[in-house]
Image (cartoon, rainbow, N blue to C red; front, top):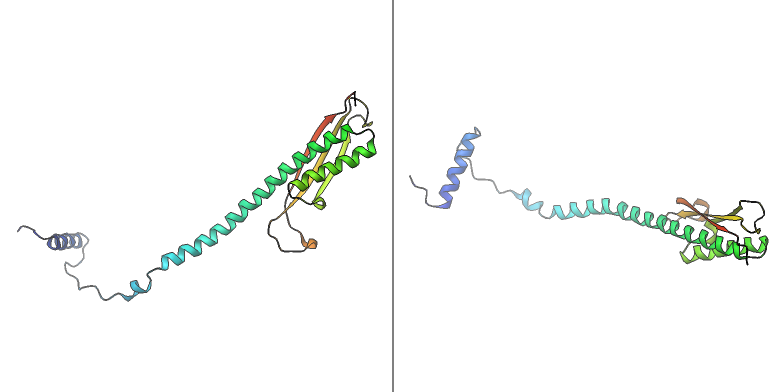
Amino acid sequence: MPLSSPEAIHSAVVRRLRFACGLPATTAPPPDDTRAIREQGSAVVEFTFLALLLMVPLVYFIITMGQIQGGSFAVVGAADQAAKVYVAQPDAASAQRAAEQAALVALADYGHPADNAQVTTSCDPSACQAAGTAVTVTVSLMVPLPFVPFSDEFRLNASNVEASSTQLVGRFR
C-alpha cells in the first residue's frame, strides 16, 4: 500500500510511534484546549520579570565597581600631586597645607568630596625639608555606595581606598 499524501504518512508515523511506546493506536481528537490560549504571551512577562530581577543587581554591582575604580584613580593622582607639591615648598608648615590642598583639588576633579578623604605625610629622616629626605604622602578615601538615599548619619561605604607616593627633597630649590 503506497503512501501518497502527507497526512497518510503522518498518521502512519504516529501509529508506529504509539505502538512502539505501548500506547493505543487510535486516540480521540484533542479537546478544545483553552489553557493554551490563555497562556499565550506569558513567556514575555516571565522573561521581563526575570530580566529585571537579575539585571538590576548586576547593573548596581557594575556601577559600584566603577565608583571604587574611580576612587582608586583619584587617590593615586592625589597622592602623587601632593607629594610633588610638598617637596617644592620652603618650610614644613606651608608644605603640609599645600600638599593637603593639592590632594583635595585632585580628589575634587574626580568628584569626591573633601569630607571622605584623609591626607597623611611622613618623612624618612624626620627633618622633612632637608635635602635627600624621602617624603611619603598617603591619601585615604572612603568611597560611598552609589544611589543610597540615607542621610550622613547612616552613610554606607562601598570601600576604603588608599594610595601613597614618595618624592625626594632635592638639593637645589
